[in-house]
Length: 137
Image (cartoon, rainbow, N blue to C red; front, side, top):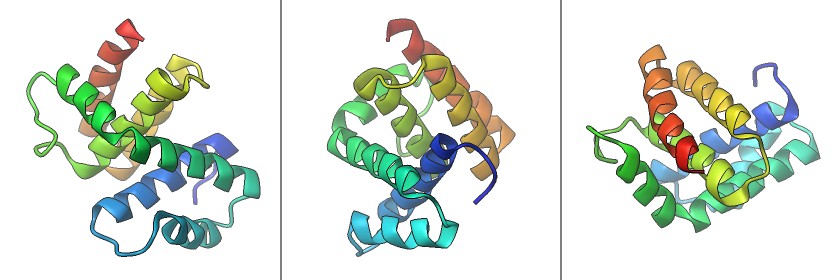
């Protein structure tokens, strides 16, 4: 796992786990998290925060997807890249539901994740959607 604070590492871990689960893994979320947490060598606190993000995104998936679709002007959920979609779900969960992080921090982290795991264009796309979400948060 790349350098970064524990919360960044947790978001990256959550992205990897959610990506694998969405890709059709037959493992439980807990098993996928345990595998990736061990591989990355993260602290228990980082793993706990990642688990909170994963659980929150999974429990609120319908609401999160509706929010993404409502703010996406040109792309349906199915047309979006998988990384973009998952990054948006995590950020919108943090901004609109958990509300335990400054909005600007959630947006900046999301842009970084999208650029790291997808592309610079993904970073711009994520920024555009989250900017609209933040206006109403």
